[in-house]
Image 1: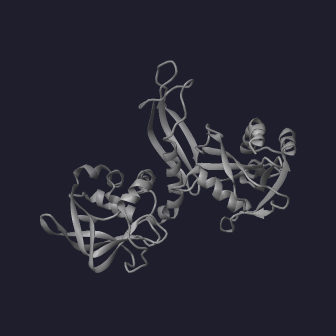
Image 2 (image 1 turned 180 degrees about the vertical axis):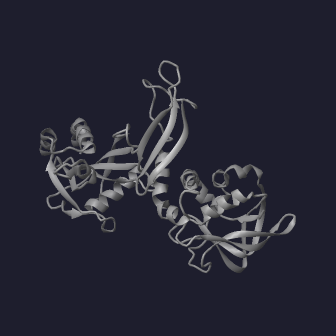
Image 3 (image 1 turned 120 degrees about the vertical axis):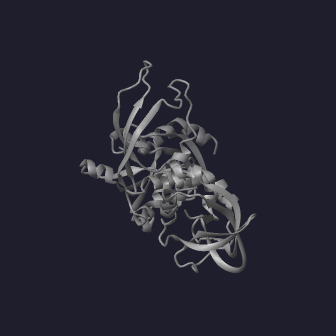
Length: 377
């Protein structure tokens, strides 16, 4: 069994438990120092690297007693990124003296660094999300290569952000209040995972009559949380709708797959829905929003999809000429914005030309709040 010196995100014990799996309980942990190295941030990432520095000392933890399985799991997790991390033999200092160990260094260990890295700041902002992401990452061990999982890591983190957001639950004054054990998932499979994912479950659940259900097979289409924002100018009483090709209508066989929507986009890792709404308004329409009016969060299709939407009305100045072509070039977006009066928007809703749920919900919320928003100007 090999000892490992860890200096970065794996010092977060909930994350280490997920990564090591059943072998976590057998591991002994003690503070340690790695002379001749320093911990630095990786450019553009939230995790660190170690870099050789004759005058430096990297603070961390020494893990002893790892099983071969736990070691393989740690190697899998640390090998995910584009250049990955490999273990290198080192000598560390503990309170009991020097000890031989290995530590993870990036392939091409002289690569660029981005200055000091703080474990405490990382843990506060990214710790919980990283644990949820690691749960999906480690499910793939033995099912996919580190290169394959590494390519998906960004979208794995967006799905983890959604699960983190889901901890803020809505009230249960009328519906059943779930308790631990009400739903038991005995098996989980992921037959597809890319930008989106599909999960299949074998489960049982508590029934309303107090009995337990028979084993059930269920599936869900997994995606990130998203924010939607309907720009509205109370002074001019007009809204902005954006038009783009959508593969959902295309896949259904709809002859008119270009649809009218509010501005929308997925909530990125570490991002709030409000931040997402402001960012997407800039990316899709070049629009700066004055204020966001929340219109609620909801599952658009809970029988099939995990997607959860955070809806907003975005108060904005929408003069003539403020609508045009937009979208994020790097994402292949091709978006056309339209300025329409409130009455025109409601006519589009009535005719059925507005046939997207987020647009329907946003316009109906605007109709309910419109007079108050106009009076407040």
